[in-house]
Length: 346
Image (tube, rainbow, N blue to C red; front, side, top):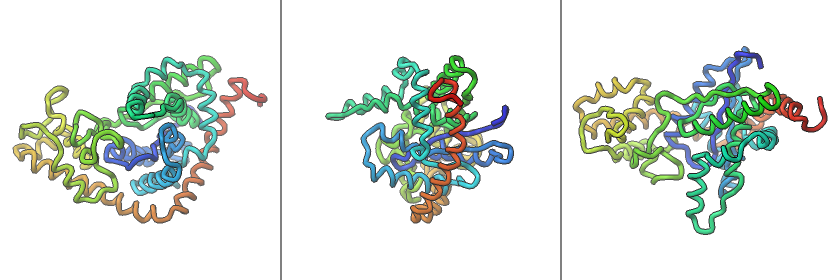
């Protein structure tokens, strides 16, 4: 990899049904990154389905494999082309786990203990009767750093909630380079200006989530159009009538969330949305957002059905992607081992 070359990496959990927040905050960015990459110039977009991260909490092995296929089909249906990007399953490329162990030597326990997601997930699990909190959940950010650093990625497209994790992996790369010499690339996060945090339709102060909140607050990528429209019609808003933004603390979080969603779906700015719906009232506005989202997701749902019907082809796609990913990661791991004095010198 030459100086100045662009390399994109991001990973997505296979657990849970993918919702609109996942689609806007991550999957949409994946497609944009693929379109901007140029393999002839040595630039590549790398996307990983992170099944190893999924084993840090309670799960069913058979269901995990099914969800990997679900996620693969959604990504391809959304526009990822395995011929133009590297799409693979994390567990098929062993360089991730070995690099995770090696990077543990330059990761501070205190940094891990300060991670917001670790604290939140631990508290959620501990509230359950007889809950078991795994060490893997604590070490999750090191594996996440290994996922990215194994490819000398320059950019990581993520949602706003992953900002702290990106900062930690940057610190891990810097600390490694200071101790063992310039070996790893310090990546930059790429958070979308619009759509970085899609909020729950019933609780617009909380992010749309696979696990938190209720069914009526999240819109699934594969949901039927009538179900999507119904959820938007019942979306929580304030007692006013003006379709406009009010800013932090202005009490219009629900309307602001809907404005942001419509901006992404239509590819327009918030000023255009406000001008279009001036004086229309919330009912008409919510109905319009529901129609737009249903239309936006319809092609993905239709393509998904055909792709998911052929799991053998999905496995072939993942295997081919893993072969390409390993070819990129193996030289980096060899450099890391050599720099750290692990095993025989080259």
